[in-house]
Length: 287
Ligand code: PAF
Image (tube, rainbow, N blue to C red; front, side, top):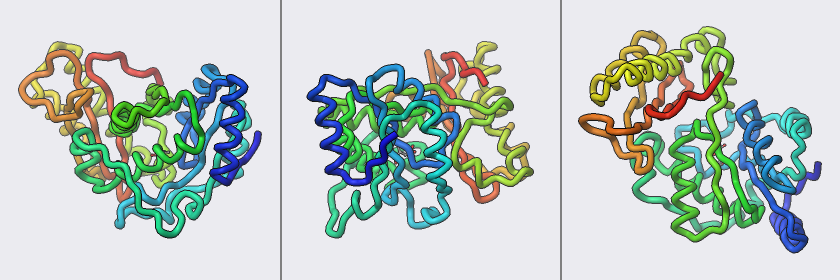
């Protein structure tokens, strides 16, 4: 497994592969890997000749009140995990390499960033779109894989790629859950054992809402009430948002769900903000 830190070296490596006719798959990450990341890598491995993974904690997607310095990091652990799934190249640039002095260009995706996490985390998706555009220009992948846990992020990247005519296929992969249903996330690391138990209210809310939907309930208000009720039962939880949204535009649904709906949740457990989601009308991912 090769580790590349410089943009020019990464581009030269990928350009050579492309000349040889090799297919490159790419998984962007901020490190502190878990099974969710590995599932993206395994799929990337299957679909291409060469698998590139980036490890870069991107400062531009953290708000001023979000603790960038506290974001968990352990490159040695990440490296061993990547070796187990056959990653060929790790692209691990420094912040100075990605955002040198004088840097001033950003990518703004419009409508699809306005609701859900876009409301609570001003500038977050500007940072995500910018770094992904830059990473695509460094890695030159044919395909890139993203998890559906960050459902809005996936839609933002799909939109950016389409609108900017980027020649990268975007693949959305199912959420990977712990045996008790908790969605895997690097942020789970922040939870103490009591909070980890309390955090199950997110998946419990999803399960309860799905049950209601499967029994024929289609009123948006009734479906949301069920999810909100479950989370409010957990005394350490504080709701940032719980919404039913259109699966493509991510606009709030009103009235009834006609076919499918994204149930999206952002909930604070202590000081940790967790997100989870499900698409009502589609199968639930197995734990
Ligand atoms: O999902 C993440 O880990 C990040 O938002 C990403 C896509 C690697 C961009 O920094």
